Image (cartoon, rainbow, N blue to C red; front, side, top):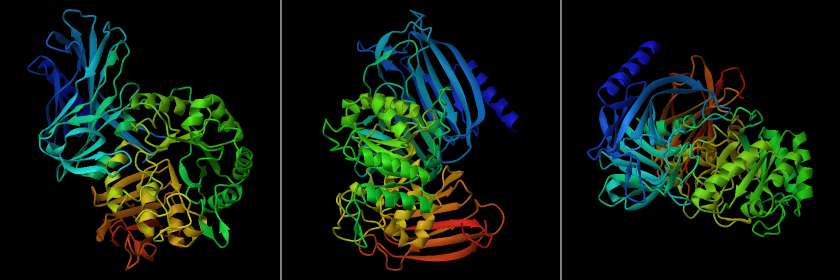
Length: 640
């Protein structure tokens, strides 16, 4: 069958080339991307999914400051190279352990008829879950020009869309014709009840991070651009359109990573270990049994001991451990708690726990980054949380890449916070780029973060890659607490908070509360402790944007975990377990209490156990703003 499909792909490629049509079709034949010459002689494209036009004729190419289009009518296609790929990618960590890498590709070589040395390639790919295209200037080309990208996305209907919105609630649902001005990707689109799209970019090596612009009354978007130096060796980012029958299929895709290169052959990333981490920022000021937690050595020791007890991987130390983070003379290796930090790292290492260190951009600029990270490696730190990077988006992208590379050389994981540049699949090239705050960390956002925010952002922000949202707060008492920072917690339920830790994809799931609050809920704590990474498999079982989501992940030890979360509405869900292998299983189901509510009664839950098989359909009830947590294991007389 595979041989037949490969021959069929090749036949289509030769036929399209012979007819001067340049079409790539996905391996499952559901998606067709056609490149063509438009009426002005320039290049354009169309996208069809399941024989339905979703992006009508849209422009490609660049425009010079003088107004010249490249390529235009006086350019010709000198070569069209079609080929297919059918292999697998085995990520060091990710949503699953094996990822199919199957696509058909065409590379068009275009040359200026008046100056044949000026050449530009357009490369297009069709996967089963989307398409991508990019511009490349061959090394042998003589093209040397400044150009503004002219890529457009002319949607075939007035669809509904949602957009990333920085550290605010997502924009949407919004009709395409209602959009007026610039929008940030990811752009998630509902084209029909059984057809969803998402726009983003992959492999942004240089240039201006993607933004999209439209005018009210139009369903057409264009890539906002700044002049780029088109020169031999130039490669644009991939323009990516995800396609799926459900929004969950977009979430589950690895398309962005597949469009990035493998790590440099000389880089060893075997030391990269994803996992659950504790965090000291939100424990500051919490009180229990006469002890007041703070960001200091005695509290850190308690957290490390708890992490070791539960099998968590890390403790993250946040700002001010080396002095006030925004003061230029706060030395990131000689600061006031540096000696305590070194002692802590040694202690934690004996317990099998890694320590992450916060580093503000002020210290990153004013002190040698190379020397700072070299010192952290010498101390035995495991990672760096980098905060408040400054600069334009283009400058931040370059800086993010540089910091990630320096961290990799010193065997440090890295988490970027505070308006980071958007992810674009770089975790394949740099597996140490393990998460970033491409969202509003929910504990800093009780003013804008509501249940509907979570079940929207997981279908928008999370398509871009791993996000650090800091879910999992179990102290949800109403009113102000003794916590030092943002002492009124986000409206949620304790069950939903636990479920969100699983639903949110991240290489470092960072838990914000003190040990005692987790110990109050043994079943939920077991659910957290069962999140052993890297994941063997992940699948969004159900969900609607802005309403609810049900996520399944298989842990490294084979445990099956399911998390469900809803918006402000209570709902009952039926969850088929058909993804299980044959055999008998036991399930522990944690639901919201009968009277639970995200505004009035947050800290209540109920636990039940049930024998299940792959033919079982679980019925769960979610309170308003609530959730459900399910842990499944093979029947053997005892739970994991």
